Image (cartoon, rainbow, N blue to C red; front, side, top):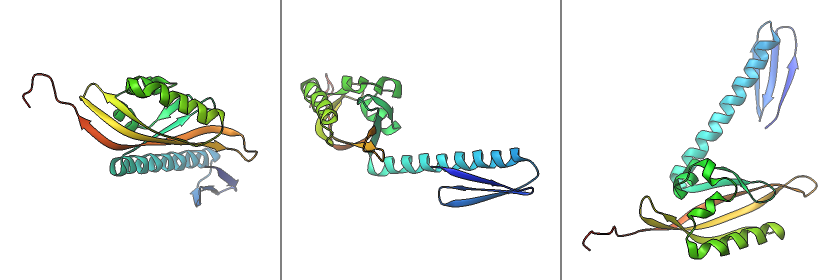
Length: 172
């Protein structure tokens, strides 16, 4: 999201996204503060929209660098994997993948990146804390610049099914 700033003695105006903002005042500092406040508000609105979407449609969002290493994950995804954002970075998320799926999931991810194809994979997450298996589908695509060069990867994970495990010692 970019902005432009035009300056006159008493009025400062700027465009943020598709909205024109105007600030009346004497100092350029007031205009800069108004730009900052508008950008912050816009960022907060985007974050709020993402949180609402995650709650209602239950998707986890992730971003990876050009080598496929996770750089950012949404809170819903962190909760789903039962890891914090720091532990999700790089390939840390793989530790929550069911042992029988782990190699296949990682190999498929690396193959998709190496061959510049969309990633689409079903697998099981093991949630040891809440004693459940979570069947998910992960999808990701490359984000490219005007010269068709990969800038990053953006993806999402949707829950297909949650299987609650019976706790030991409880009668069936």
